[in-house]
Image 1 (cartoon, rainbow, N blue to C red):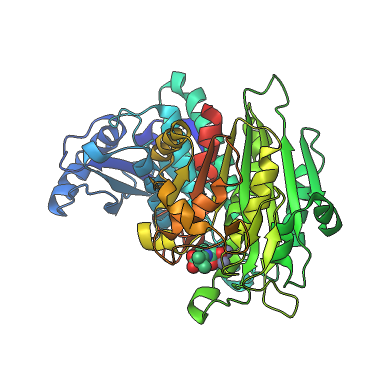
Image 2 (cartoon, rainbow, N blue to C red):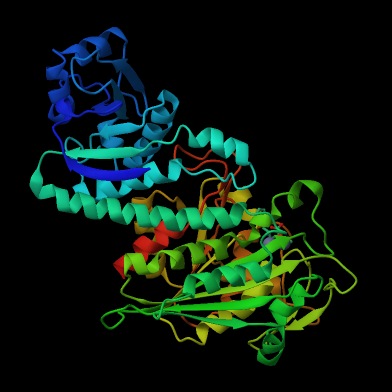
Length: 504
Ligand code: BES
Ligand code: ZN
Ligand code: ZN
């Protein structure tokens, strides 16, 4: 599917499907929709009235033109309430357009740039959001379903053209499209990794992905630490969690330097990389264990960002750090009650082997501080508690620096990835005191679980400004989340962090 911007007069556009729009309750059409309506002798207005089309968000009215204009069919899309309109709506309209076009078997689609005219939004931002929605809604993970892939492939849209008559806006729109496409590729890279089964994506495979990303790129360097090296480094947390697994753990460290210019900031992204979390000897029950291949979603998003970083030309020095391992029960597995010595020297008593993410991250976060960055941001499918607290669509956000947190919230409003800050309540810290070790990896039972988990992480970030994204709920969509986020891995955080990285 190609996305282009062309200098096109909508009523003269030749295509299978022409997409125009209408705000809720507004029947006097201006701009592109007005021009098409005029060319159709007011037919859209008439039909909308007769069909009681209100223009509610996502409402669609499709009709044939019978040669009156070159477009074979026209789709009038509802933009909803003008006051609620924004970039996230534009993104979702992209998703709705792709679905409708596929259902209708349309190969050539021409669309108005929603939001840029009557919505009064910046044209480049609209083009970026629309392209993201178009690309991301077209994603399916069909690697292991070849015949379905073939069937769906027949419905593929060939070309979507964003029509613009104002020559002066074309360059901006094209830039927006390019950005949106690159970002969507980063998201889809992450989705693919999350959707991959646990056996097909072992810790060594995550390491291999990092190797592929760095290959042939002089400005992306990779350091891979294997078991013997990790032993020398004293990575007792990561090695401890990996004890029960038949597969070797790795610490992955990617470093990106801009091709030109001095980097503005040094930033580390840390991703939880449990390729499968069985719970270990505190084995998860049937319900909890089935989706645990997704426990590397944080790592997937970090790799997704690195997979498109050169295309986006970020101006910061960016490090990506992943502790890749598997949490399994076996004769050699970590026991409840065991004490591990983490890379920082702090000892960790294992209250529960299923709270393994924070134990691996004790080492990866500590290793992150050694890069002396300006900021550390981690992404982790860390707690079931955050799902209880915020539900399926909201990422939990905690950290030790309010300015950084506010910046992330601001960017999330643009990218539509919902965040909610939870308090890093110091009074709960004592719940993590160990009986034998310095820190217990659990404390306080289920109450406030997302907070106690973050307090545990905080012990390993020194005083570096740090934010933690608990993506346990949002990294995987059990049901379609919105028009551009189908069932499966979501790639959450990729667009958010790319936006933020562009703004620091
Ligand atoms: N990987 C899980 C958290 C999780 C749960 C991610 C559901 C995605 C969906 C994590 O390692 C875990 O098991 N956490 C425990 C901690 C508890 C033992 C304190 C949890 O949340 O139940
Ligand atoms: Zn676990
Ligand atoms: Zn886990």
